[in-house]
Image (tube, rainbow over the protein chains, first blue to last red):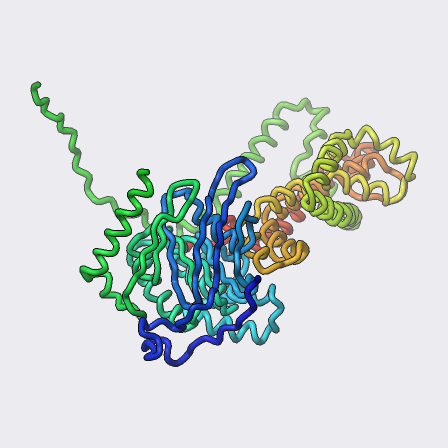
Length: 275
Length: 286
């Protein structure tokens, strides 16, 4: 079975305030599967066993973060989902035409201005120039880069480059959005701001998220579910449900409940590294 | 255990002001000093050579006055320099018109598949290693004494750097960018045109600059071997030796150098104009 392409009209009205129909305040509540890994194992040609029997389901409207030791195969999981690597065994169910992917670094084309970069994916998908321009300007504004459309990436800060990278992926309005440690290289304050903005984008566009990070507080703040993976070969050790309602208040980070959850994830992660 | 007193090496550092920006005088010096140094060295060399030449051999290094009086000052010599420069420039540019597309094509073919790279790279190196001057007689016999053999010699001289630098540039494209294209299902051609070429262009231009600097030189070298018909500056150098007009030989040499530098600068400017906005190698620091 492969998933059908389900175009996801962005929820432009009610998302932010939290719909009455969804008790947790999720943009879309439902049991439809957005992305699922079924017994995925991955062995590289050099014999490295990267993943072992990983099963994980991301439902529509869920935001799942994966934390785990370095080199545990988190990124490999995303590459398998996107088709960049083929898995050795197991099944991935995903609609790849609806997949957004943000890499560790912004991977902007240095010879294109911000506008050209944001237009790139639409260009490769064959959108008309007018449509490209219109959507790109909309996304640039949405990620807070107004006035920077004509700047080359060289002239932008790390945070701004990441915003441009997000805008580029958002332009295709993906229904599943995968993030591979996108904010890892940014300073704490910029990272927190981008986290807040990512939550708003999540509410607004209603995609399903799969987010890889080394930061536990980032994972807990963004996600409806946090998955802890073991050392290589990567296996899923523990899954934490994060009960806080969306949209998330930045002050949430300073509440005792948040701290308790972070420490639980932290203990689990420490066990993952030590065992 | 006795606690040894840490020796105190503290030194007080007072604030040091940043170097002040260059003023008008500084800018002027910045503009004037480099050419003055170059000119001074040139004069020094000239004086040393001339001082050590016996009187009957002074013609080997004509004075500035003689250079003007018997070469640059004469309108027919100036006209000859101009027309011959154009001939030489034509040969150089025609050679580049062959070597650049062929070189780019070779680079792309080698980039397409490792097996093609393996097959072609040694041949390109071998082709470059053929001593060009040694095969000129062969070229003359095969292709005669027209313009074509000279153009081909220039093409052979200038081609090597192009596929080598282009291939290096194409292979250095950011993996992330390639993945980005792959994820959208972009074809090899789209990826080549939209990702690899722009990314490799600065490296290619480094190769083009090398090629450009060789083009005029190799055009003149080729002319030294093809004296039939009315040729360019190379022929003028040979002719002025035969006619014992060393002032004109110097004039031709200086013109040739000037021409070569001009072609090099043209390619450098073109590269700068194309890449300074985005590439690390160019443009102002922010």
